[in-house]
Image (cartoon, rainbow, N blue to C red; front, side, top):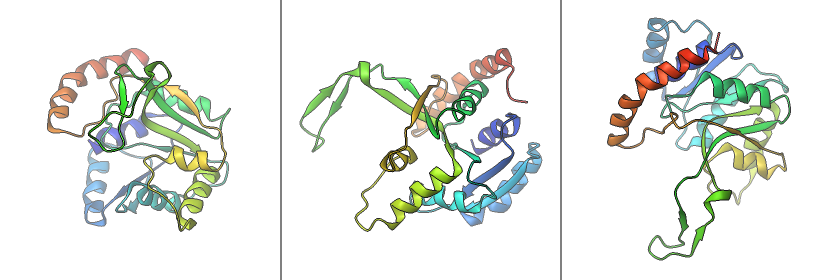
Length: 210
């Protein structure tokens, strides 16, 4: 699935440098895949961390970036990122220093403190499911992560957008699409295989990227 993300970044006109965060033992294999599948853009390999935020921070620090440069964060478990979504995010960065990809929630969401009893059912018309990618100004993302790492009372976070919001930075939303599923469970692979030809057809119709 990593190869899909590499090719998406390779094909987008806005991406200059690709940084992959992965365990060091896989770095040589990733280089082989990059060569095999025609990844010609500058490729940087960074060590992954135990937690997501550690991996992202390692990637941030490995990039040869300036303050106003743009960082777009992708995850390999979401292989079907469209060029249309990528282009919309890059358009949005001219307006906001942080933007995430979302889709509207279609299922009712229930909140529970203990995982057994319902505390509250949330209004789905105001709820959105966060997808990938996310896009940030380099300086904002770096500051957000450094502030979090320096906080001795920090609590667990799920997304980089939480860290940016903690700085008081506005974070806008860009509508994604439902092809961009997260492959987490074995049955997700079957869904991904069924979606793949439809996703490829959508990409041909859009004609974005390079």
